Amino acid sequence: MKYVSDLRASQHDPKQLEDLYQAARRANEEQEFTVDLEACYQASPDNVLYAAWHYRLRMFPKEVSAINWKLAVPLGIITGLIFAVLALQRFELADHMPYIFMVWAPIGACFVIVFLTVTANLPWKRALPSIIGLVAAGIYVTLLTTLTRRDTFQALMVFHLPLLAWAVTGISLLGLKSDAQNRFAFLSKSVEVFVTGGVYIIVGGMLAAITIGLFDALRIRLPVDVQRFLVAGGGGVITVLAVASVYDPRVSPLEQKSEQGLGRLIPTMMRLLLPAILLVLAVYLVFIPSNFMQPFDNREFLIVYNVLLFAVMGLLLGVTPVRTQDLPERYHGILRAGILALAGLTIVISLYALSAVVYRTVLGGLTINRLTIMGWNVVNIGLLIGLVYTQFKWGAAAWIHSLQSVFGVGAVAYTVWTIFLTMAIPWLFK
Image (cartoon, rainbow, N blue to C red):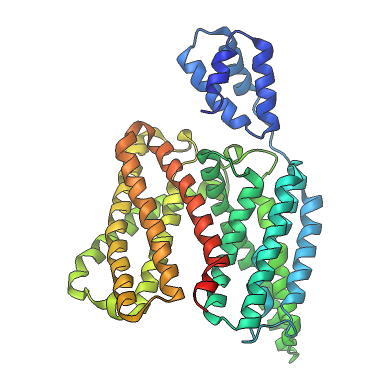
């Protein structure tokens, strides 16, 4: 509700209202302006100026912008070439892991940020620090793992650098003072980007398999470096094209189109998965007492629990509507009840898993892996508890907004913990 107070102050001043609208457009907040204007119109339907704007915004919606392929394709090719070179055997870490496994996300994110910034004509004062920070993080992690042989830290960074790159991309796009609704919309749209990238990878993998198979049929075996070059290069191209295919940086996250294609399929699919996941967790909870000590004695169980926790957070993100009208009103109560049930079951199981990690830490001491797992458990459990609390505090009328607020806080928490793990944790465990 950023513009409500200004809209009310401008309710009898056409020029002031037009200036306010143009300022919202320059800030890529036209959707937020529209939502707030509609709220003012519903509160004062007799106001002629509000009514005029209500029909103006309904009759002349923003046109869909064409995908900026002229920029996306060259950037994708450059990214692919860098990925391909860093995947060669001459560029490997001490354990024969290609450098690209470590630094693909920061490099890819830099080119994605360039694409978003140039296409949307955004100020470089946000993009440049983000790019410099990502490059510095990639160099820092690579040097630290190469010079000091911190194998455990290296394994953690394979998963955490992509998370850091994702967070920094969001910051470059939204800024540090973004509101919870736009942060949630960015997170929701990111799911579509990841799924689109996955589709590209499947198609590219099939093409690579066919290519290798054809050469094998002629008894020609492609050198390992050639195979790496092709696979990694394709991955670099996909990194940029997946974003360009789905995300239009010329409009705010709240204004992104999601009425067709994967944007419509993904939330529907996840909502259909919700009852099945609820059933699995409920049945599992019944069997915990008879196998109570398993996670206390077996670390593999704890890995499964953490994968489950992240999967649940992703599912909750995917099923939550970006806008109220994205879900028919008759399904609001059912979906809200399912979300609350899933959050409640996950809190119980996650507290059980966290107690097992604490138990193993007391007996065996604090390690880098245990601190990482406990940190993520605390963050995710805290978010789930906050989700349940805000749902009961704000009630059914504001259930979507309260969910988005929790995810907005979660984006900040994820970013802070990821930065800590990347920058500080290796010095705590030398």
